Length: 295
Image (cartoon, rainbow, N blue to C red; front, top):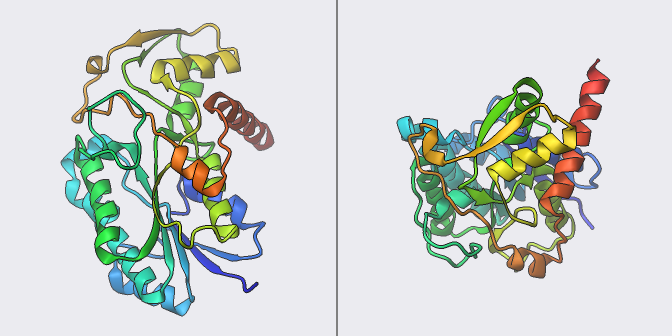
């Protein structure tokens, strides 16, 4: 079987770094870029890069993810989350390739408290959700072959995220307030990367294009997640208090219920998804190992 050349954009982010680890053990050639190597908001640059490197698959891990900042700078969020996505879609359309694009639970609004399926109506609450939805719509308008994966509550040992913040704060503070009225599922970026990698490496994407949902299994609030992190790390001196979302000032309303229904991705690709606690423990162990190695 001829090896494929796969472009991974946003390679310095949480998901991109996880894709790097997997790409290193693949018989296919993974090419990793971030903004310094390829500006995906530049259509001509994207078209030239994909043609020169004979790219047949793009995994787009790039995104503008600062939810609050997007309210003040929607133009930049739109550029990265929608315009750049259109550029990537057009490049794969021209190459008769496939685009893997990561989207978000933020495309949904406040309606309902049952797990979100791919067919449920979208109603984003803020600029971040709107621009991510525009990215999904751009792919549909271009008409390229694509697999869109919506995810939620992403964390890893890379970059800044809730798990790493709680790891630090529960070690430093005696009291901590964490919201209990937002419910969803923490998602380990390593598990999402493995799902994408498995679909690519197994050639399962052809004929299975569409929108899918992926998060870890199980349900919790941010308060529950923080408690589990503290318990696992034995940070017993920190008392974690449940509080309401409106006790924190924010320019955007976050989805109060962000549980994603994973039935479609599991049935289509035969993917087994770990429970969020299991993946949380694994990630914490990796962080500890990393810290010890750096000493």
